[in-house]
Image (cartoon, rainbow over all chains, first blue to last red):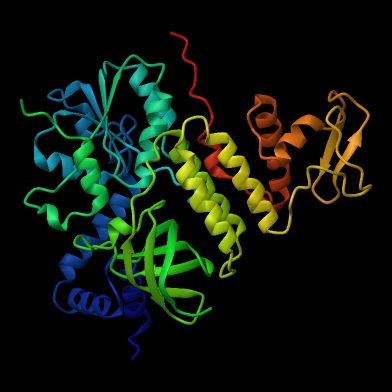
Length: 199
Length: 240
């Protein structure tokens, strides 16, 4: 069934959101029009404003509406630590743990030759100049434990060879509350080779 | 193209598709390069995720009559070779070559064996370049563009160790009078003969093989460069 052109257009536009199919789009559109017109207006304005004003932080490349984001500006963070992650969602995940007090650098992806994503797209040159021109002492590479993530980590390490900083990689192994029986072989191999001595 | 049942394969590349799926390209032992959709593979509890990584030998089953198949089952059947650093990037290079040059759905069982051999030998010390060169050479001949190294195709004359030769993708090798300093790129016969024997022990042979095979691959790759090559560039030098 077809609604009037404007409603159809709204439904079509809502489908650009992840996880929203035709049925959900219809429910959302009808809800906004029937029950919550004020909310709809607020949503529209918030979206317009965000799209217009949000760019990338000049220091860490994370999404931010100011040239330097709040995390980079904060004076409570440890200047000597820099954590390199793939996506903004990774920054949120680490921040939620509350156990890291350093700064971040967001690559916005990983090296993927087949998709044509190389060092330029990831801002590796920007990362290098940031490390050179600041008080960073340790780089923690927290790219995902996938083949592309490992290749990215290796590339960064190679590029940093001439810089006097410590470079480390996050550990990976058995998840908290996990059972060895159900962990895949690759993870177990990493867990064993990266073991820690207890005494 | 038919369904795949318990087919040994390697993942060449996987990219996110929709919310929870992965659109994967596999190199299978009997059907060559095949595109397979792994539904739900990106869900947090998916058990397929660990098997959907490049370089891991897997056994998979997939259904579908079109060129895009749907993954039914996938199991790891061994460990990936310990690829790290430059070997890892070389592995990505092999994958990019296969992904770019193998036609979809065309069986290449011999190339599959060569790929398996290359993966297991890449990480051996000092073997990186010879393995890459042999892989490139085999891939060219598998695709019907074999580089003939021991005689000149046009004249039928054998290649002489002390002579110099120029290479043309269509006409193969042909002798040149210059001593390698002419306008055209030319290669010493001794290195070409060593390459024909897959003997890469001399550093000159390794250098010649790299340039020659790159020249032979260029027309097949067209004007889109191979991105994994740029990852081998040396790190920048900082003036302190």
